[in-house]
Structure formats: C-alpha cells, structure tokens
Length: 268
Image (cartoon, rainbow, N blue to C red; front, side, top):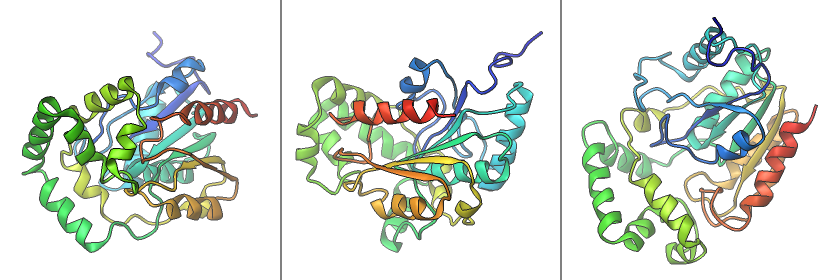
C-alpha cells in the first residue's frame, strides 16, 4: 500500500518554521498548496512533539528529515523552505542532501552571521527557556485576548524596526485577527534557546537555486542576513519585501512576494 505522500515526487515542499512555531501552525503555506504542492512541515527539535534530542544538531536533524522523506516515499523535494531560525537547518539539509532538495526558499531567514547580541541572548534565555516559556506565553495570550492592540504592539516591537503603532496600522482587520490567533498558539518549548546556539556555516556548499526573501524593516533578523546569503549562495536571487516587519506574509506587498515564489517553483 502506498504511504500518504508516495507518488508525489517533486510535488512536495518541506517547510521548516522558525522560533516559537511548530507543526500545525500554518504560516504562508497556502501559496504552495494553491500551486498544487503537498506541504510537509515537521516540528524542529524542541518544538511541538519533536524532542530536542532528535538529530541533536541541525546537521543531525537534516539527516533525520532526509530519512523521514525516504520513509514517506519522497525521493525529491520541489523545495525546502527555511523561515527565520529554520533557515540554517534548511540550508544544512540542502548542502548535505543535494539529491533530495531541488530548490531553496529563505523567508526572513537567519543566516550564519553572529546572532543575537549578548543582551538579547540573555533576555531570550530568561523569558523563553523551558521553565519560563509557558508562563510567558500565558501572559501574552491573556493580554491579546483582553487588549488585542496592546498585545500585538508589544510583540511587533521585536519584529520590526518601525514603530509598532505604524506596523499595526498597516494591517487589515483580517490580518490583525490572523496574527493575534497565531501569537496565541505559539510556544517556545526547548527549541528557542537551542536556536541561539551557533551552527556551522554551509552556505557555500548549497548549489541549488535559492530565493532569498527579506525586508529591511526586520528587527528580529537584520537584512544583513539576507544579503550575506545572496552573496555566498552560488545561485541565489535576493527579493526585498516591502513589508513592515519580519512577518512578510502580512501587508499589501505579499501578493507580489507570493507571485515571486510561484514563479520560482515553476522554473525548470
């Protein structure tokens, strides 16, 4: 009997989400589904039900993901998508398993530059470590339910270099509701602190075509990360998103970005 994804060779896109995200929380995946692709989105180590010990390192998890694809009968991925902190694992998978990955898409992705600074690292470890993150997110959920604009502005401050009020004003009512719903479901688990550890730079070993999408207004992942990837990846195209925050899927420019993604996936 065929497995659930067998027979869909070259029509599967693997999505590796960023910090605080896990399998089941969709973010921008509709562009792939609408183009006829199956989306495979496993939780990275430390998030959801994936233990931190799975693969131990991004390289180990890349190998585990390749084995997952083999067990599902997937011999070729149309693309691997690295979002934010998931970018380094996506690149590692492409470098270690070039026969599996056809293309690479980076979305607001962390590269191999030093990140974050010492103060941010200390704050992240204090607020989002495995012992405190449940309480942190419980407070944020309560704030978003009781005072949505206040809660959204607080979270957007870490995602945009622009004033949070300006970013929020640029979102439609539907986008605000979607973003609020997403934030209320986020958790950090053991994964967020692990994401702050250094990862060996493998960008120069990625020979696949790559689409690097980022905005200059991203406070969480500075635009320099996208520029560094575009400079090092042998076959990369840098697309500057005209969005106000790290969340490039929200705002009036996203339809243009979605078209870029569809065109990139349609190339031979």
